[in-house]
Amino acid sequence: MQELLTYVAQSLVEHPEQVSVTVTEGPEAVILELHVAEDDMGKVIGKQGRIAKAIRAVVKAATAKNSKPVFVEIQ
Image (tube, rainbow, N blue to C red; front, side, top):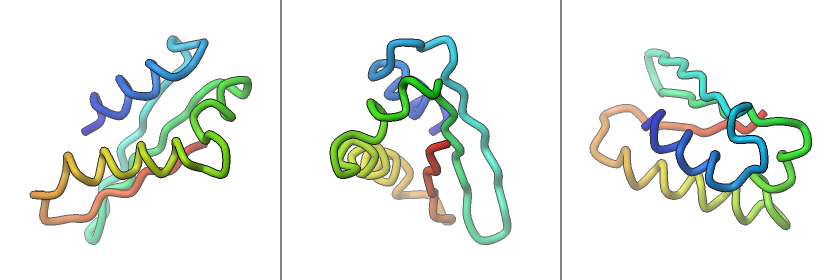
């Protein structure tokens, strides 16, 4: 799931070398923190958050069989 999020984010931004994903696994859920360059933040979020919602939907679909829910935070 970390590789999928990294690939999608790198495809969207102008500075793919600055994309990183941090995984925090807790007892109830898994949190993926997506870090991008300040200039690329708008491209990852999109107008009215549409691209961010799409990224979250793709990750949720890819991890549907996991026992823990997976959340994506964009920072």
